[in-house]
View 1 (cartoon, rainbow, N blue to C red):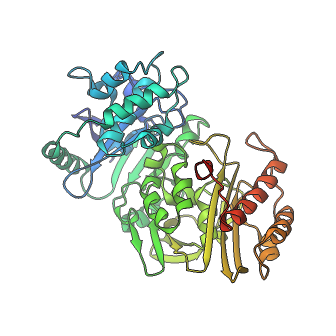
View 2 (view 1 turned 45 degrees about the horizontal axis):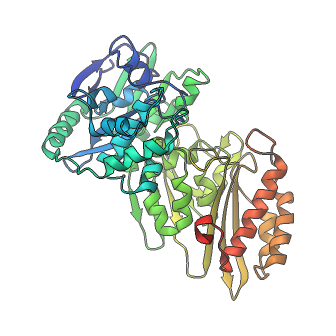
View 3 (view 1 turned 30 degrees about the vertical axis):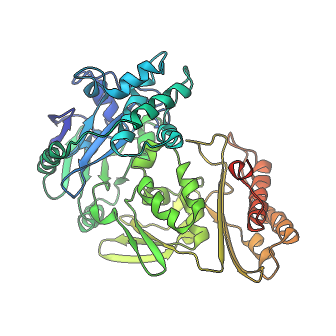
Length: 480
């Protein structure tokens, strides 16, 4: 028999049964049971931020972990043992300081996007993410406003950043205890409408559960699967939620590499990737929007096999290894070998991504990563280029050039690499490598870019890398 979904909504306990597992949190909030219509539906794909709510769960240290999420693509059973806060809760005792700041700064016109901005800035304040103008811009990177413009909204965020945080440690501890009790032990099982949702808490339980249901769809942050439901109207008889598997949510440091558990979110991964190279930090700053970075995972960005995922090309260039598990059996392989062709990966039924090992850079290795997209924030890459060269006296001893958006999978540029190895990394070598890119790739023309643009952009990234290594500024802020 299935269990009820137990969670807190604006501090009050809820027990839900009977709704399909693919019911989104947004549908539930706005529906007849709650009628909390402050949370808006704009895009239904996690792009506009109008549906932003605050998700809370125990942090393992007696307090709460808080993160802003898109309610439009988060499935209702994912709330089990968690707490969700909506914009109505902020205004229960009069306007909250962020609401006051939005009013005083004239930061709202039609008001449709306003609740999402309020909740996103509130989340940024509670998590200590607001400090200066750039941090405010980063926090609202997943929110769109088509009326006011962002200037007054940023000012409202800066006003909030100046306010001290309240001490809610006692309240947080009580909430965390209540959520742990609601979560229970073992594998959470929810059944409704002929569909099944399973949520293990440990990797051994996940292995057993997936082995028993190899036909199941794995769900982490639902940043892809959510769209399969809201946009493609696909049906999923069995879904396994991996977002609670604690064994997959750690980053471990080895002597020469970092191990990222498959459940580590992009926001959590960003700081550790920055330890490897600043370009990784910059690309991750521009990875989708803030809410997506809060929920999307390292393993999900790899396992979905997307040819335009931002992480795989960078990890391939670094020489990453992937670890997979099926039942009790573990195996690993170079990440580049995981991607076979578009829509097909080297993953057997019942097998899941456990971790990815990312080597640290050696003294004689040089690295760069560039994201080419139409917008700076919250956009999909037309081209993602990542390079690692081993240099000896300026001569290229080895090369790893990886690209996303250039083929049906993230892929290395073998011909371009061969054109560089054994030669000085100079203009002539780069020109030969750029020409060789046309042997490596035959990109598609699509809405994001033409094939010719992609080839030119890829070649331009390689030239940019050469200029950077020669001390030529390549960013606007470096030139100014």
